[in-house]
Structures are given as C-alpha cells and as structure tokens.
Image (cartoon, rainbow, N blue to C red; front, top):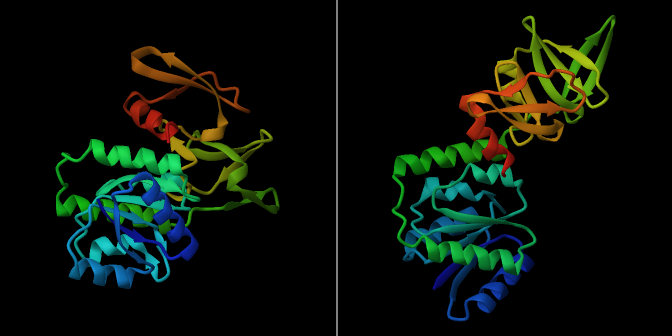
Length: 254
C-alpha cells in the first residue's frame, strides 16, 4: 500500500506515519506534504497513491481546494480537529475521518473500511464538485452567535447557545431559552433555519426548530412519525413531520 500524508504539523505527521507503519508494516509512505500548493504539485507529477491521509486545515488553506485544482483519484481519510458534523458533508473520495489527536484504533477501523470498499465505483466529477462546495461552505460559514432583542424600551442580547428551541405562533417567531423565557425575534422561521448552526439545530416541522440538547423524550407516533417532549416546553403536540423523520434520525446519529 502506497500512502501519502498531507499534514502541516510536523509532530502530527510523524505520529501518523508511525501509526501507519505499525498497522500496515508493508505500507510505503511516499511523502509528507504540508500545504495545498505542494500537494497540488505532487498530484500533478506523481501516480495516485493507494490512500491519502489528509488534514483539512493546511498551512496555506483548506485541503478541499486540492480537489478543485487537481485530480485526486485516491480514497482519503481526513485527520482533523474540525467538528465532525462539517465532515459529514464531504463524502466524495473520503472513506472516513478521524478527529485529532489520531487514535491507533480509529485509524485501524478506517483501514478496515478502506479494505471493505475497494470495489465501490467512483463518483462523477460533477457530484464530486457539488460535495466539495457543500463541505467548504460548512467549514467556512459563520453561524449566528446571538440575537439582539427588544424588551420593552430596552435591548437585550441573547446568546444562541442559550436557546433550546425556536417556534412560531400566530405568525410570530419566538426563541425559548434554557430558563424557560420566550423572546420575540424579528426573523421568520425560514430565516432562523438558515442562520443557526445545523449541527445543533434541526427543523422538525413548520412550527419548531429544536436544539439537540432540548430533547427530553422521543415517542413513536402514528403514521411513522415521532412525538417529542422538549425541555422547558408545555406543548404536548410536538411532532416530527413524517417526511423529516429519517433526516431527523440521521441528524441525531452523528
């Protein structure tokens, strides 16, 4: 197995190489690269390796740029400190991702995944670029951190981290916080959905956008739906829309 390591932290690169040699004594580490620029040059002048172990944040940018600047035919295992949700967006050549610091058992599991999917057909260039664009957006987008809310004649700053869910009532959007307080927002539910972090918030139906830590209980309901009991809420009829149930389960199972 020919392996290419793309990592801009020397100690991390050395550790990854050591783990590769322990797990795959027959492996040949072709090179260790620390930047997008050097990696692009390498791929343009060398035969594709059997596997790339790649950090996402390199010395001169995000390594996803590689896929826009040159052809990367090898499967990729990402080694990164990024939040795992963002990595879920990138499923093109990637077979796995490992959060830093790289653990030997996790790397071994990633190798097993590689061996199990040798025969998986390659995706189209168009699909590859779509996934790259989605992933880069996920990694670079800044989500809203606080809302400035008018309370009487006063203004109050409410941290998004304190919000357990958003809900709509009589065409008005509210944010409900951990302490059970409700605040009126000058946003529609559609607007809120687009500015809060999807790693934490999910729109279960037209009325509710909930935080993952707001869920107290989940109950099977009629017509393959789910009924939720939310912390600080007295609403007894919070239902995950049927068409959103599977996506909701996938969101929970990250």
